[in-house]
Image 1: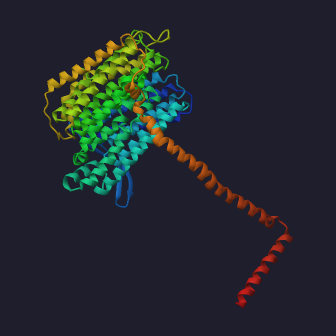
Image 2: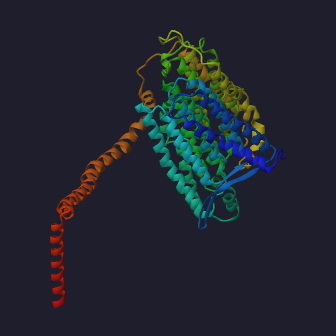
Image 3: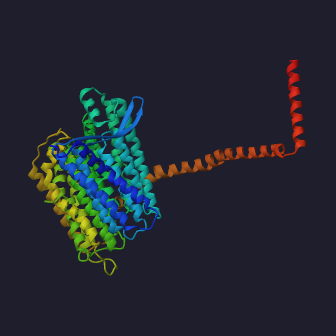
Length: 621
């Protein structure tokens, strides 16, 4: 049922996409000027307009409205033709709703959080630019448009992670994120090229229709799907391309709430969901994705168990939850993966913003073992973070309970019992590190010297309230979500599981793990020497060190050799020699241009003499 005309829907669609771009350009004009408060408010208002348009389009999509809009032809090269074109369906409707809502709240929060930062104007330009890129990514109706948005969010992520570029650590983290994502994106681009070679088009609907009507060799389809998946691995920080995510916490905390919780890192999951007809036809590939996701769920959660850095713990938590989403996508229950993406966006953003409040109160200190007794001065923040942690732990009636338990039900119901066991262990770890964080920050005895930690300002707290509300109620929309998303994603896999038994087991594991964390850390953190496992987890399984020795150091040595031996001694020396030779030559011939008539006549006579000699020789031949 359509409430508006096609032209009005298309206008709203363009409003969703281009309001953030207008905000980015507006803030960019003020980028090198002194802080201007209106920049934050104008950008927030433009994102709010985008959110309102997203809500109208979302409601329309729930009533069966589907829109295709073409802005303009982009490239026409022989038989190759592509357009800037967009689609509104149930997948993109949910994504723009989540992205615009979280973006708007993060923009509001940032007005307070970045109030005293000299790069205030520049920050909002980058932030709105990121939102624009994300909207292009999720609303494009073809793989090339998706890739443009994909690269845009990568660029803006680089700028935001390295926002405080005077810090060496922030510079290194931004470069690491950029390089790892570019490596993965190369794989994705090759996958897109193969898709065009196979199908002669890059539009989603045309490719998916061709899959149903033509017999494409599974080998070529598998290669294309795997290369696309490499791009998804990089963007969603899946092993072994995961190391950038924790280091990306060098950026401002609201950036982490937006990019590393609700939007960019979920782009890989979105790609798997959007390209589900391709992956359904690749034999055994889904099981590989599910196994990788289960491994990452345990892998990320285990590193969060021992970490002391407030933001890194939440980052490892994000890594773990992305693993859960990949499991669901690999088992071909795409709607469950999407549902967990939906709920996770709210409670993880809330958790990051709460961490920002704690950092403000603690003068940007991040070591949770040096905090304690912050519940009283930061009561509202504590309540919000407890809500987010309960949702993350999968405890009823919070949002995470409904989406995460559904993934465990699917893995058990499809008889992937080992995957289910790994995810169950991951759920226990999640509850433990979540309540470990809460205890050490808010309830353990005071272990800091700050006299009066203070609560965040009211604007920051009010911007967190909708996220807290959604972290509680979002799970109850499961049936509506399923009915809506099946307009675009067919229920290709069904499963039957002892639901109540699994719920009891999972809830018991989560609650017991949380209670153990409360008991262990009620008196604060006690230093211990730790064994091999503790050192392994503290050092991130020594993977960064391994990468440094195997990849970074040899690459640095090669670069050093090319610089010192090839560039300086060969290339530079050759160029310098050519210059010196020309200088020497010019000194020889400079007498020709000294302005002396006598000298010119002599040279002319000499030239005529030489010509006569050549003429005589030629005559006598």
